[in-house]
Amino acid sequence: MGNRFLRLAVVYVVLGVTLGIVMAASHDYTLRPVHAHLNLLGWASMALFGLWYRSAPAAGETRLAKIHFWLHNLAFPVQMTTLTLYLNGNTAAEPVLALSSIVIGIGFLCFAINLWKHTRS
Image (cartoon, rainbow, N blue to C red; front, side):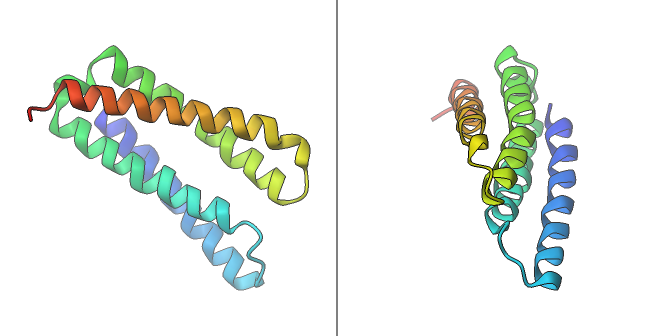
């Protein structure tokens, strides 16, 4: 599971950096929240998930890890797409944006539970 998270984290950092360059070149920073989320939830969080799952391979093989992976990686592209739509004036995207954010939050909760179950105090 760790390698899956790491590979996707790299995809998201490339997207985040590319968006940052495009925003800077165009002087249009409307999508800065998308840029921030790509780098924080896409790159930083997923890379940390991946590194932790690599350091605790038994945790990465659990059903909880698989649920975490799929919740995050199905909801995150939806969140980024609907956030882009919303920031560009499509307020109808807000309910889907909210739902995808909740799903990502549930994924984080799965990670937290898994971490607590597989680490010693």
